[in-house]
Structure formats: C-alpha cells, structure tokens
Length: 417
Image 1 (cartoon, helix red, strand yellow):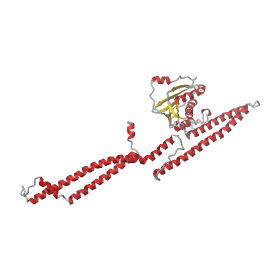
Image 2 (cartoon, helix red, strand yellow):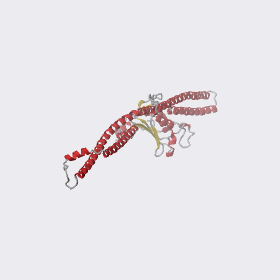
Image 3 (cartoon, helix red, strand yellow):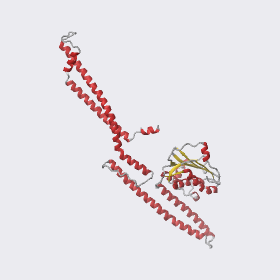
Image 4 (spheres, one colour):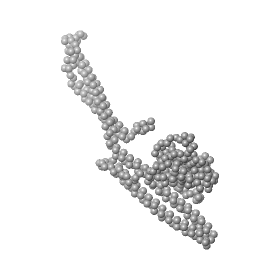
C-alpha cells in the first residue's frame, strides 16, 4: 500500500502531464464549442428546403389540400419548418457526439504523449538529482553532471551545480590537508614535552617537589593530547568521505567491549552484552571509534559498582547499537546539549579523568557522515540510554526468544562484554 501511494504521489512529471492534458482538453472544448456555434449559424442561414421537401413528400404529404382545411401552401410551410428544425437538431447532436468522442480519443493520446514529453524534459533534472544523491552519500566529490545541451535554464542549473561541487571539493581537500598538518604540528610538541618531563622526573638527583611537579605536568600533557586528538577526530569526521565497506556492527561492539574490559573492572562496572546480527556498511575505523566513545562514556560517567549493557540488533532496515549505563540522574532538557562539543553534565568541567567533552560530538558526527542518527534518553534511576542507528543493506527478521538468548552474553564485572 505504501509503495502504491508513493507511485501515485504528485510528482513534477505527473503535474506537467496533467497540465498539458488539461490545457489540451480546454482548447479542444473551446474549439468544439466554436464549431458548434458556426455550424448552427450556417444551418440557420442556409436551410436545405429541397431535401426537406423531398423527404416529407415521400413520407405521405397530401398532393393538394389539407385535412384540417388549411391551404396547401401553409401545410407545406409547416412541414418544411419542422423538417428544418429536426435536421438542425440531428446535425448539431451528431456534431457534439462525434466531436466529444474524437476529443476524448485525442485527449487520451495527448495524455500519453504528454507523459513521454514530460519525462524527456525532466531527464536533465533527474541527472542532477542522482548526482546530488551520490555526492550526499559521500561517494565522490569529483563527480560532475557535465550536461550537454542548449543554453537554457536546465543548462544553467547543471553548470551552477557543477561549480558548487568544485568549490566543495576544494574546501574538503583543504580541510583534510589542514587536519593532517595540524595533527603533526600539534602532537609533536606535546610528545617532546612529555619526553622531557619524563626524563626530568626520572633523573637520580630529582627532588620530591620536582617529581610531583613532573607528574602533574604529565597529567596535564596527557589531557591536552586527548583534547587535541578529539578535536582532530571531530574535524576529520565532520568532513569525512566515507568508504562503504560491509561489516557487522556486532563484531565491532564485541571488539570494543573486550578492549574496555580493564577500565570497566577498575571501576567495578558490571557489563552485559546482547550482540545480535546488525550488518551495515561504512568506514569500520570510524564506526569502531563511535562505539568506543559510547562505551567509554558509559564507564567513566558511571558510579562504582554500576552496570553497563551493549545491544546490537537489526530493526526496520537499520543496524542499531544501544548502550545503557547507570550513573547520575540526567535531566531531560540537558540531553541535547550533551552532543555539543565541550559540554558535560552540570558543571563538570574540571574532571580531566572523564574526558574532554568531545565523545558524544564525535559519535553524532560519525553517525551523520554514515547517513545515520544518534539519540539519547534518560534512564530511570540515573544514567543514559544512547541509541546509534546506521543504514542496513537489508531488512532484518525479528529474532525469537531462542536467538535473543543465544546472543546474550554473560554479565561479569571481570569481563567487559
């Protein structure tokens, strides 16, 4: 029913076809009306008395006199007038009937030709739409429409779109070069500082004050490294051209959970996994970073002895990963602000051990680059439930209880997943 409704939606092609057909029918009706009036006027001016007289004579007109006592000329005149009116009425009726049938047949033919002509006229627009769709999916910014045709409105639109793609390609290339250069220029000094401080702390003649100062500087340096890494990742993700490689989101989530196991054990967080099949496509490295940020946030913004669960599944043509954790109560009005860069819950801006406030921003940017979405909702009793949805190449069957039990893993604080 949905596909049938989509086929009947008022597209531009359908509207143009109906417009052409409507104008043609209106012109045909006006022409038929004018023909009717002209024929009617011509019949009134030139009555065919000879044909009427012959017809009525054959029909049994008395040769002389009248049964009513009227003169023969008067009776003949009445018969001629009646015959003329009948002839006019039959002629005009035949004109309307046959003209209406002809107009309907020609209108149906005009409807078909209008549909074909509208398709031909809209082919350049369809080419522009397909190119824009491919570019929006991040396949190739160097692709162009290259429309070859007369210098009309369609040609101007295609050339303008090609020029816009050229500017976008240059901007994205400049952005990637900037990220690459900034990555090197920013990380190198921090690595040098870390090495110098570490050497100074490890010197035999280093005093206690020097060691404590060095350890503090190492902590600050590590925070700056994480901050710069997050900023560069965010900048690169927002302008990434995603390579579509197929993979299963469940495999990525299982790998991330295994890597996060030591940190989860250190915080006493009990982790559960329900990793059902969730095939999707995209950049596996970026998707791994997405799931990693969700799991790290769920561990770090939790309380000691808390819980964390990760679920992957396929639903309605989407591959989903759902991360739920316990923790502090999150007001509903602050949910959206958590996805903004450098925004944390409440006034928590000084706890460096909880990250730089870029995790969820990177998650949303990565999901958007893959054509997906990320939503969050407060968990009753405290904590969050974050759901990331990515396009899936095929619809998924709803798993039964047996499949769900097989996908569910152990809940063990010594194992993150």
